[in-house]
Length: 122
Length: 111
Image (tube, rainbow over all chains, first blue to last red; front, side, top):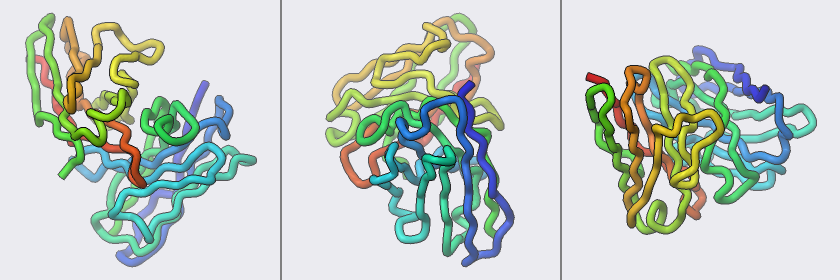
């Protein structure tokens, strides 16, 4: 069974840092791009960041560029999101999601999602 | 402000068909056949129900169908059922440094 399990969410003060992780199983990890998508309380989904299968290409939404860093360890089947300079606007449930493809247009469709981890900046 | 525009809400009676629109530009929806749709029930993770405009992942009911015309994509739910009551999000690819666009979401209510 394909599974994604996020961890690392917490309550953090404004200006603080947090590192989210996502452990994957059940598929060939390095063959798929991965994304982080967040959802603020009572709001819609917001795509945050993506990384290609090999990790060579990374993508970010404008509001997190320069503050967040996505990375992956294909030997450990793990995805990470390092979040710095956090603000209350970053408060959300953060989902890890697997892309159907490896990179480029293959990363937009997300076919497996984790259960989410909650980040509260206050 | 979302990159893709969806109606805030759509409703229908059981058994009816409803359609949700998703409007983008000629740089995203209009440029590629890369549109996906997600269903999200309250307090649950989203679920992919349509990708590449018209394709359904294995296990997704054929009551869900997708289409596209110009810069607008559509999701149709036929034979509406109580369990279809959820939020629906469209997504598109665009060739940029922010390649994944999402709509603001549409709340579907089954009357």
